[in-house]
Length: 368
Image (cartoon, rainbow, N blue to C red):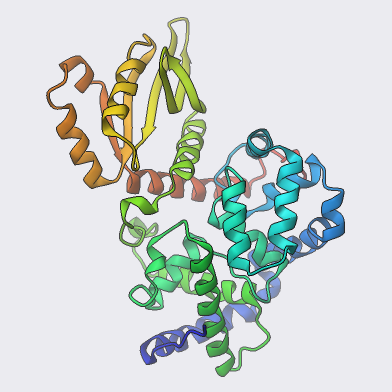
């Protein structure tokens, strides 16, 4: 189904056309475009049907390490090892083949990949699709969402509020990119594939961002989506990565006490004093009674200093009411983090990773 732009949206796009032309005029010196071209060439070698038949850990690591969505991982080797450990390399390669070259609608293949592969969200999946099939697949990430918000699509395209989308929503997003592509063509900016449209969105996002005061350069995300729209596993991965960036040994799904397996555990060795531990539980839809019982059991581990519940704001209020009558020693050990705050922390770490990554202080073992 084709998407039609409103007159207001067309006018807003038109206002950014001169901005985009300046970007295009300086394309030869734009590091983002140079990196994009290098990625196109890399994937044309590593992600063809024939190349996937012979993909090993090195090639898989090169693909994953080069993703923009992997930038927030300081240790990309850990990310690659985790994906292989959680899914196995043969299964990952097979699912990549189905995603990129399988039959059926792209939305159907997107959904199948998300169900089958643990540890990869919409940003990673759509990035792979966009670089392999830039003529018909777009790249769904925070930058694109923010740019579309600037262009006035929030009301007509409520999916902007969501980091994780379904296959049907991805197809609707691609329809929207087609409409923007056509509108740019009306301004004589032709021959853009969807990566080219993504570059236009980047220009919109960067230009809008640079007009903000320095203190507001990292704008808040679009209004928080309903609680059920955040992805539990993605949130767990964010917490692991935040912990690692802070210098903790951070792991997921750890048994910390008898009968208590927690979503995320941060640990640190404090000189000769021993280990301190911080427990995180991500609460989305499960039983609050089970959550509280699990945390009470985790408190039996003498190294645990803090029990942190990550949830949507309205859920946090409910949980606080449930624990209000419990022993003071437990209540004082429990802390709360809103989903919005955790996502913001992950976003800031992603920006920091991008800045530090340009210094190449540590070379990737995968050569990208």
